[in-house]
Length: 150
Image (cartoon, rainbow, N blue to C red):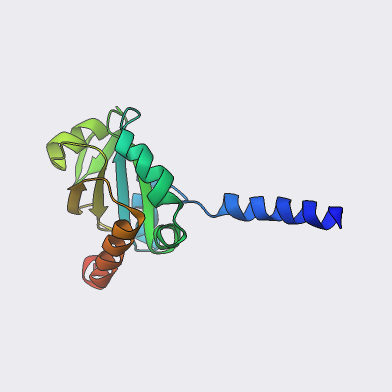
């Protein structure tokens, strides 16, 4: 009986570990969407951002949000202060410059919905609950066919 309980606990922790957002590097998401078209959902955060930590703890642990992001989008996490060079709306810039100059964001957390061609569809600077994020992601999927067309 003790062995079964231990196996259950180990198995439960493996399932818990597997049920998390599978973040994809930004450049890899742009490449992957050429082969398997999906929308890219970028979460822009900073180490000092308290609402970002709240979203990570609450919204990003919700099973519905995890399922949507892992199966229907390429989820990307970017640090707004990063000097990494990425392509945003066809321009090569640091993440920081994309945040301010291209996506015209001004606060964290922020989110950017990106079409397979790498062009931003919409941006949002606001912390969201799991319920609100799930609603928003589902609304995006209603227009998915239009945004995924070549």
